[in-house]
Image 1 (cartoon, rainbow, N blue to C red):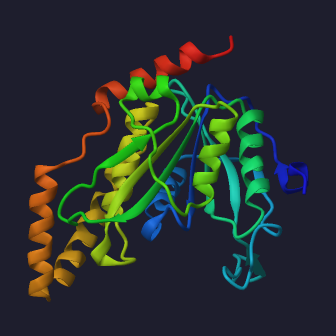
Image 2: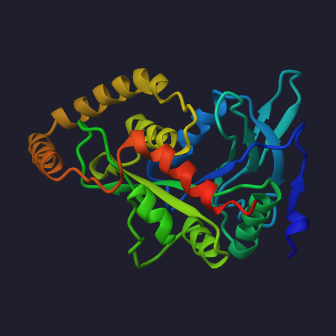
Length: 288
């Protein structure tokens, strides 16, 4: 299947300014929907333009992820299919714009899907890609989770203080995407936040806010992460209530707090330096 058969372009009113692509997909690399929730918050608080749409039909088993039916404002029945829109967010008061893909990990034809993302990256003139994800981790819900970054690009790793990915094992489309960008020698960063494994699939807006805060530091554009504070307090209270009902759970959280406070991950440079270093890296590697 060819990319031009499934990647449908809508066009933009004007070219983007030095865009960076940011991608999150539900599924393997998005525990409790934390990463996609972060990007949806970013989209909702800006004025997104749809640059392209990746057709859902070739990529999904609709018995696993079913479309939803609803009534629109005119009481007409509408079917909402799993979507992967390529959206442009403009930040005229800052140095760059953002291209966002926040969608659903496909069930099949992963190579074609990844080629669609690479095609959108190239056509829109993106200078780098940042994938964001979340995974279950042994961390307490009472602390702000750390965000870990990695890249295979040695210059980018030195500039931002990132590590080289060392994970081996089963992966998702995001992992395939990162490998493809490495093969194409395109700058790519992976950001991952941990979520407390003992709370299952409960919502974790604190982890989403941590991802948004790190994106703001790296990209130098506002993410309005502080607007999640009310949700963070509400869910913190719910998490506290859930843990308080079990003495073993309370003791376990206290143990995690001690470990977290002693060994807080410090795998990235300070937030104040990240945007400047990222900008410098992109300047030095622009073809013009």
